[in-house]
Length: 210
Image (cartoon, rainbow, N blue to C red; front, side, top):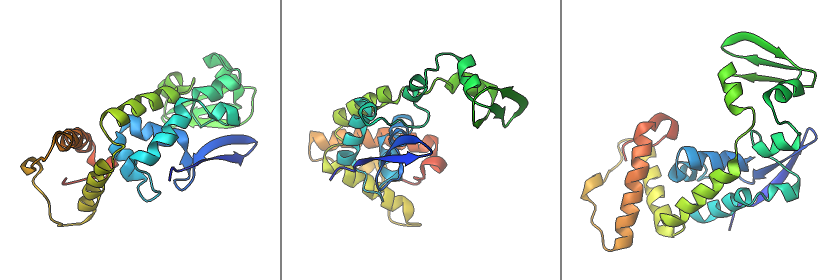
């Protein structure tokens, strides 16, 4: 069953969140886009996220269904546009103050609320918001192209997650697998790609010794 998208009402705003995962839709989209589909599936596996349940979440974002719900995810460009902010000056003026963790610079505005960012460079790079719906469309294409919607790949990912969580558990040499069909070979290629992602940042992704 697909994980449903609910609308969270908080402080006068409406935000689309994924029930069970309790995170904004954009968080799952960003994880799948930036860290890889396998990383997203593993991170929210307890919430029931699989290839099949991930797709409707991505479609919700890709088709911008949040607009019909009158909701927006934090950091999304749709939110900036909804506020009528078109320039960096207008963004700064929308806040009472913007401060930076690595600098003593403080930007004053005539709006309400304060914002703290890593640096002035981060402000200039992210103020307009991210176009998450484009990210979602890219992930959907990859999801369908690489066969994540078939239960077999979810099983392989689950096996990898279990092996990674068991200290001293048995391992299967990565290059000693045999393949019974072309689809198995394609799955193996997908897993090799995701393994390279894990090796680049094993601590953050949380998968070791695949």
